[in-house]
Image (cartoon, rainbow, N blue to C red; front, top):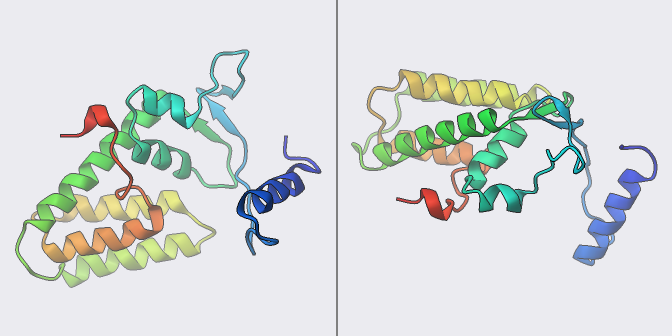
Length: 175
């Protein structure tokens, strides 16, 4: 558990690995990660590494989204169903992006894209409310009938914060 000297050891390991005296100016730690509602434990057989999940064919983007979509002050409950849901969301975002890239060369509708960006930024500035920010993206995508190249650029800009669409796809899911 995250009691002394946990964070001090994390800092020392990170500084050692990078060769720098300072690893980060700001540090926060997410709450506990549960798996299917239980404490993660090797003895219970509910302990997964990212490598294990990737070897099972799960997308790095889906794993990342599943891990970041819970507010850092709340315990996260990692579930296989949640991972599947995150994978579907990533695929939906990718389709929107690809359709927009090949769509008309116009800017996104100012009211829709601007509202999404304002909501996204507002949620992120609200104590890193990533769940709310993801909701803003999904509402925008749901209400956009035909994405444009401007919409694709807008989604790419938002992904610079989330870092999911730029991740390499799993070999078994590439088309």
